[in-house]
Length: 335
Image (tube, rainbow, N blue to C red; front, side):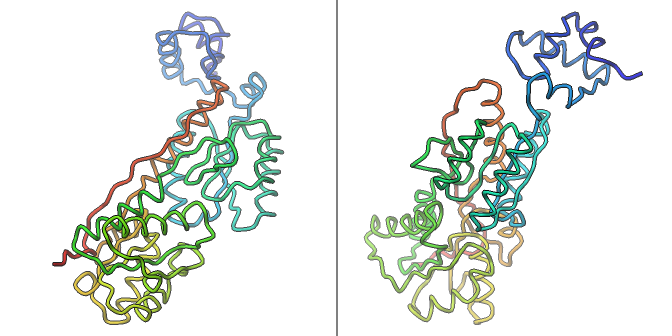
């Protein structure tokens, strides 16, 4: 016969109400009591009924996650972190692929509302007034990851994109490069496109290097496909570039592919640094030097903050996550 909550309460020498509060992450018990109850649960092999728990606390133990592109390596790393925390804390996830369509985003927000998710993690995209209005009407916690909003008061977890780009370009300058080009994402993208270009320009200015528009090419996005042919375009505009900062690892690997087709050796003839530290950076030949944002850790933290908000009912503080340079073999020191 399967153990019941009554069996757990008896073994831990507490009331059924106390076991229920612990299972539903409510207040009113000590750390020692929780430890005793959890030990009883593990020893008995008790499996709490999710439906019954939902009836008690009016929750579904489910969180929704909105990604513009669920197939990207960027999204996969964040999702892995979110899923680990959600699973460990007894929650399921519903993943929605919104694409670039505002209509599709609204459809998924409506779907998540109908499914009565307990909270939402919103990734990468810009929060519009329509999205915010819908989220507010749902009256559930929301945490942004790898994006932020100056206009709407939503907590976020992200790297400072401008500062991170500044660090990547400064690294190239410290290696002796002064003729530095950039392959950028969409400049209309206020989250990652424009800030990374601003970081590039600021690093040049602070090191006494004039910005030259010929050394910047802009793509529609951050994917490998977006970067195809961009290195050729950049070098056609300014041939004497010695280093390139690509606004994503996929753009950087695309540039390396173009360099191979053009007979340009990396890093002997051209240094390249990426942004993200995706798995593809390790797998490229040569391995890609890149600016790392800890996507897996960002996913974990966003889920922890969201679930904490569910327990406390209080809004959490936003978090700016540290970034760092991962040195591999695509940047050469020059005199």
